Length: 341
Image 1: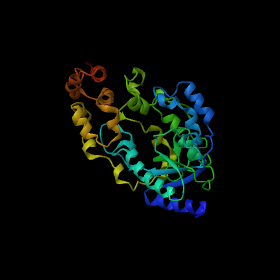
Image 2: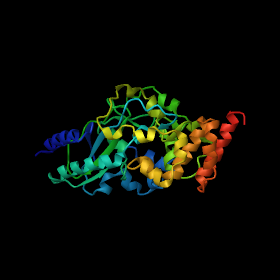
Image 3: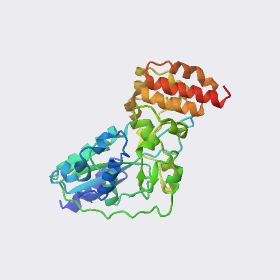
Image 4: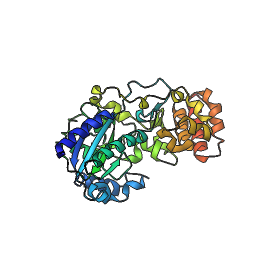
């Protein structure tokens, strides 16, 4: 088969596996390498130390896979329509099963297909040193929005990106055009002003970073801005006008998990370690572990709770884990302040 024929068959196979788009970029150094290195130098990656390691590998796919000729970029829609009516918010991508497990299985099938045509591959979904949004833009799979999120003309912002580095020399697609125009809705919507300029994100201020990647105490200056969010933040995604085109995902594994969303914030505080692991089995939330999750729950209760929540918070303030105890005590003080002591 010719490279063009292999690409045509690859796209068809990707579609049959549930991917919503599949495009190809040349395996060349990332266009925004200098901006990435500057971002790291300024410390805007926070405690995500892995992002500062092996930068040469991260910006050049040929270092990761010697002989790489193409980067296959795939998109998988996870939009599930309006969210469950609860007293808290969880980022849409974490409503149910962990997307890594789902997508990695699909990538293995595409890897096997490419191998039959003589290709050697390295597939990744957020798990390897690839600046996937750069390659997505080069491949015409959307463009980098002012929020730093990738935007797709038909999927909006609600999709996962995955990459396959391959030694096959497949025809490259045309790079995407920036369609943000003068719009700044994502920047205006950010509760913590983490988007410091168009396409410039200070992760240390981002609610997703603070509630997920951050392992320690949440800085006091951001606690009220977190509001009712207990895992991640979709504020900049929700604000994007390109989401008017978003269609609901065909993937049932992304639907809101009923066993989670029927619980109140107060209910989460009573979870033991075993109960936490069972409730969030196969969920990305499980990875941050109970102390960090209850830290987030306490902050949300501090912002939205009532005196009825005080007994549960006071019990949490006596938790042997200092991360839970500290944030529970803060929440108690906030509720008492709002409700006159």
